[in-house]
Image (cartoon, rainbow, N blue to C red):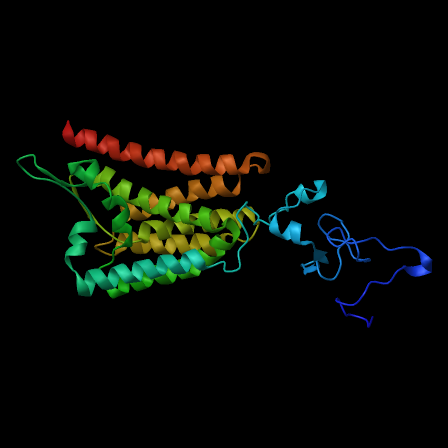
Length: 303
């Protein structure tokens, strides 16, 4: 048999006249190679390339009954428990794509979408209620408003900010945790708008979610023991703009920032032993606080 020919006859003896182990699937084939997962000998016909060594067909297919083959492979995770992925910017790009698509549709194709999706809450002099104030069937606006933008500069500035801070958070948190952070921050911003403005609210934009990412970035820099000054300066600069430029809803920015800080702390400082539980509880508690704020304001308007 020529070297490297997997189809030739097996040698009758190994080195020094001792027989080599026989393939567990082809007993007539002697081999010096074992599956790197379960340790059983495998012949060239059964060798499947792996990142380290070779695997047998049963281990690759998940059908092996060998005790060692049943040990689960350790799934690599990020520092904060997220699953490592090839593209650490996928969710960020999807969110940007959704925001841009909604902007194009609402600004140029179907302008009525703004009136259907924006965060509006109004109580007429006669007591009739519109928008979020009308009840739970209108609460979807708390979320849809975070994907609406009216001016090109508005959507451009928010998406640039999302592209600047989003990928870093997505890579360290993982896709699911990052998405939860973004949505909770956006909802918290909308909830504070409704809680403060009550029956006279009108707001839209992703700024609440973006400010939440700013807050979580500050938590990340603190956890990584990196200089936090640049992030604080960024937040202060944006807050100055928030309170000095007419037409900007400070309530959405503050609500998102606070939610991002709290959620970021829960996600990044959860003890390793109970990390998933603490992280999930953080998100659930934040959502409960958002629902509570909406219920309180709705009860006040109906009182």
